[in-house]
Amino acid sequence: MEGYVKLYEMLESALRQAGEEAGMLLGQGLTATLTDSLTFSKAAYFGDLDDGVFVMTIDSREEYPGQFYLVFNLRDAILMSSLLLGIPAARIQEKRRLSIIEADDIDAFGEIGNMINGAINTTFQASLSGKAQLKQQASKKYVPEIDPLSAEEPLPDGEYLMFRARLEMEGQEMHHLDVLIPLELGNQYDPPPEKLAEPEQVEAPEDAATEAVDDAAADQPAPTVVTEEQAERPVAAAAGTAGEDMVVIFEDSDEDRLHLREALDFTGFKLVEGPLNADVKDLFSKGNVRMVLIGSQDADDRELAVCIKINALRQDQPVPIVMCAHRWTRTAVLKALKYGARDIVIKPCDPQELAAKVKRLCRLPSA
Image (cartoon, rainbow, N blue to C red):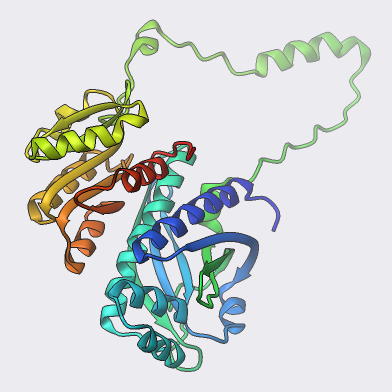
């Protein structure tokens, strides 16, 4: 497939990050490696389909309006959702063999999808020149010769860019993830280069040469003049994106805040802290926020409210959030991820484990 080099590179980086983060959520080593890109029509794609698939819709907003689709093999979706739900291995194999997907699987896979969407969203926002905002929408299964294939289901008719990533998990047989982006939306993300029209070859009389040069100069647009007032006009920036790099810690316990500070000394970042009810905007005003740590006894609504405030403040430029708590339930984990946490830690925090998460989320050298 010619062109779309920038889009390929964006997806390559985004899917690699998505695989790592989804693997950590599942407690398994998962990689997503982009291997190929093609142009397909919907009819050709689904006409060659043998296995069932699980289609996740991603809504693209702001300056890049449209929708694109993540298409997983149905058995891969069942595997990942079952691992998140803690289902025994024998039952997982039976569900995969019979392609059994239940309501709990769909809910659990939605949480995995949130994490994958978050990784893609972060990469797109950092790489695109305009504002981009990706939101996960409804997911649906499609099994050939069983589920209906219509003009709009499981995705609209049309021509698509297909980017294929190989999924690998130790000890498991997996297939691939296909990202299907409509051509029109792909051209918004990665516009094709403009073709310059070849000038017509016209022989002008020698005595008209000077006149032609004058005419050409007259046709040139006048240079844009930037006034002093425009040059000095400040550009609005999102809260917590300017100044010294820092990590913000929200924690009520003085002792736990001390332990977190000691564990983060290696970063060299400024460490700013406050209780759970601290003013988020005020703390974010003190520098460039690279990451946020939220500590508590239980991951309840009070801690999740801090996540919501941070995401509302930085909805256009998300910041990684790690939640630390003494007690976690499966429901609490799912809620934390739903409300914007990128990772979780069980207290007391192991300094090496926390350091590994900080290095990954802040893209620091591992050595």
